[in-house]
Image (cartoon, rainbow, N blue to C red; front, side):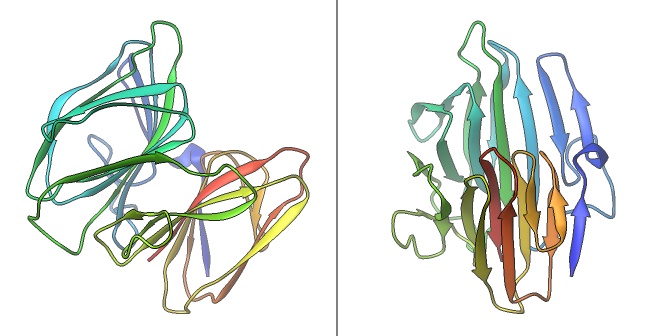
Length: 230
């Protein structure tokens, strides 16, 4: 079963320095029919103007994945981390019992474009932790986060797997899953198809009661997506 969440139907917020699109209810955007999907609670697509950002604020008991699509982000937190992420890098912060952090666009002339993703954990009130690194930008699936930190993936405190998918022009990739799994696909650019469903940039796709998925790129450009299996 497939349910498409079109990019132009998402919630939105524009504060001048920040232009945000919300796949699920967040902040001032509330839609009872879009409260999350399984443990996946937030997918925000944010565009942050040069030198704009989020002042120090707190989180607790949330797994927070940041994906830099273009530009860079400067991160500081109460765990002592002071880091810069650039396009192609991922960051996973487990808020645990509580963490304070800030996020800014350090550039004076380049916009920051990112995805911020929240998943509810299945372990609560633990020590907060921080993970950051780039992942290969090559054809196929790459595990970004797993509950066992298998391979080179981040450790996530949830029974969920987060994958990066890259498809070169005119290629396909299949994915086998358990019939009981929920899957969410977040498209990063145009021309991705999942089965007979076409996705454009910013579109999301809820998938249930499927055991085999075929991802296709029939265009002349590389496509990229984030796939959540829960």
